[in-house]
Length: 444
Image (cartoon, rainbow, N blue to C red; front, top):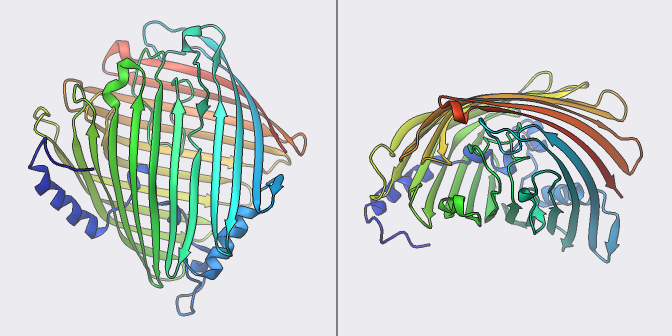
């Protein structure tokens, strides 16, 4: 992509951004890099002893063993397949997320998932996972689509080990048509801040690579993604964009249970039309610290400086410079696994150029009862959208639970409930929604 034409001044600001990247830019806005979601097993060894390289033969064998240990029920030569079918049913009392005209609906949601794995040589592998489904609304037929949906978990990934480098090349893709199941859950950053929405057809694709460079006490991770977001719903065409996303993290291992370093992210976002949102670049960077504590606790905290700069077509008041900060605690015990996170950050908005939010999130899951899994989660977000002609202050609250029961080696049933409440400064944008769901999964 060529960043010229609309605003020559972006050349200078891109130089600043690249400098920030060199200082250690990570991907906290979208979650940590996949490679360092948790400590590698080899971190358990004292650093006075040689640990296994993240990019060495042992690591390659461990990754291949983890992938091949999944239940692939069909094999054609070296190619392995895993299949799963799910039938979901749900009831919501506010299908359009409306504060003034609530309508309920029953939704039938069948889905078929396919995973395939192809080992390449002794160490490398190609993996495909794709989920195809459909949402049928029994009362509000205008929400029914004419094409299958593609699950957000769909991905084509190639794992490659070269010397001291571990490389993942991937293409993640999704196609969705409504917002019924697009509410916030513990692993999401936020939800779409829209009201009175019927169809919102959208295709989102990320293509890029993540590279880990293992230098023993220092581990460097760099990433790049090209994102294409396209909506075929006229109301949301202003969201169509192409984005370049960069990440860089420097990890220094202080011991067998702690590490610190610098992290940050950078992006350039180019919108097809600038009727609502404007072209911009964003960057953030700062230090982090992570430690494995007694009793299975992992703690991570980080923070630093973030900024955004918009091109000349944007109105005044869009550029910002602010701080970001986050903290996360997770614990895995004999009885349950839970996590608590909190933070403050500024993200791209949906109705305006920026969304500033302060959040707290908690989740817990246990399978202490044989064949039964119990899950609960909740979150609070205090947010403000600003930049452009739209501005809104609002809080949103989520609380939910899910119970799963494995009643046969191939069948699993589940029931869930979620309550969502948005409290806006505008009365017509304040609403709540109840969602009750049932699901039956067959996995061969």
